[in-house]
Image (cartoon, rainbow, N blue to C red):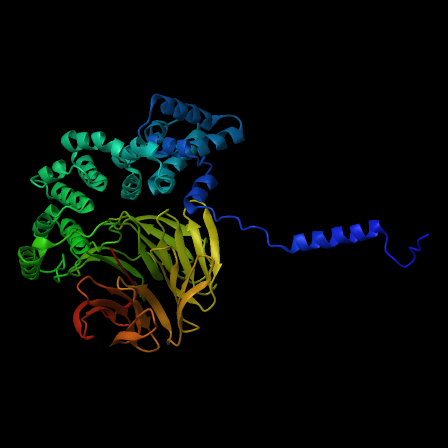
Length: 554
C-alpha cells in the first residue's frame, strides 16, 4: 500500500503543467503583422476593392464603357432618393467612379431637386480638387508594384485620359515596371501611328524591352525635339551608344524641360560631368556643350553605356517658390528671379512644397491651415483645423497625402486632404522642417534639441547630427551629404554621413536653403533670398528687405 500523503496528485501535476505552459505560450511575442502598403490603405479606406482586377477597373473607368455609363446613371438617379442612406451611398459611389462621371453630373447642375443640386456641386468640387486623383495614383502604383502585366491596357488608358500630370506620371512609372515582350507589337504600332504623347511613351517603353531598337534609331530623325528625347531615352535604357550624340544635341534645344532631362540622362549613361546647367545663360551653356562634344570625339567613342538607367526621379525644372513673413507672401519665381505668381492671402506661410503637377501646398503657421495653390498660383482650397499648432513645414507624398511638421505639438502628422488625419509620429525637440527621402524615411531638423535626425515612419532614429545651434532646416543632397541652416550659428553648413562639416557659409539668421544644379546655394534669411557660390560669397540677390523662411525648388 502506497502512502500518497504530502505528494501532489497526478491530476494536480498535469493541471499545474498546463497553467505554466499556457503562461509560457502567452509570454511569446505575437507574430508581427506585415505593414499594410500605404497605397492599398488609401484605396481600402475610400471603399475601393484592392485586388488586381478591381484596380484595373478603376483605371479603365477613365475611358467610360457602356457598362460604366449605366453605373454612373444609376448612381446619379439615387442622389435624390427618399432614403438618406441611399443618397449617401450614391455620393460615395460617384466619388469612387471619379472624374469619368463629371459630364453626367454637370448636366444635373440645374436639377429641380435642391438636394440633387447640392450633392452634384459637392461632387464636382471633389473632382476639381483632385481628391479622386490620389486614388488613381494609388491604383497605378499598386499595379506596378505587383508587376501586373494584365494591367498594360488599363495603364495605357490612364496615360491617355489622366485628369492630372500626377496620374499620368504614376501610370507611366507602373508601365515601366510591368512592360513585357508580348507588349512590343502594340508599342511599335503606337510609335508608328499614335499621337505625339503616345509615341513618346512607346519609345521610352520599347527601350526598356531591349532587343530590336530600329524604331528608336529612326525616331532620332523626328522634327519634334521631345520625340527625339524619348527615342534617346529609350536607347539609353537599351544600352545603345547611339543615344549619346542625340542627347548632346538636345542640350542646345530651346525648351528648358528638354535640356534638363537630356542632361540628366547624359550624366547617368556617361558617368561624367561637364558643368552644364540647363537654365544658365546661352553663352555658358554653349561652352559646356562644347566640352560634351569634345568628350564625344574622344573618350566617348569607346564609352560603354551604364545600365540600367533607372528612374530619373526629381529634376530641377527652373522654378523656385518661397515664403515671406511680416507680412505674409507666397511667391513663385523662375530661376532668374523673374516673378511668375504671388499671393498675399496667407498671413503666416512657413512651409511650402510642390506637388507632382507643379501646384503648391503651404502651411499657415498661426491659423493652423493648409492652403493649396494650382500651378498658375491660384488658390484652390484651405484645409482648416486639421493639424495641431505650429505647422512649420510640409511635404507631398507620391500618394497625394501630406506630411506636416508641427513644431509646437512635437508631431509629424500625415493628412489625407479629403479625410483628415491618417497617422502621426511623435518627434520630440520641436520639428522645424521635414524632407521625405528616397526610401520613405524622413529628415527632420529639431530646433530645441539642436539635432538633425533621420527617422523611419515609426519615429525610430537611423542617423543623428547633434550639437547644432537652432537648426531651422535640413536637406539631403545628391552626394549623400546634408545641408543645414543653423540659425544660432549664423551659417549654412554641409555635413557628410559621418557627421563631418565639409562646407560652411556665414549668413545672418538663415531659415532655409536649396542647393542649385550649378553648385551654388540659395538661402532664405532675415534679410531676403540670396544665392551663394562655393566660397560663400553672395553672387545674386533675388529679394531683399523681408524675412524669407522657406524655399522650395522644382
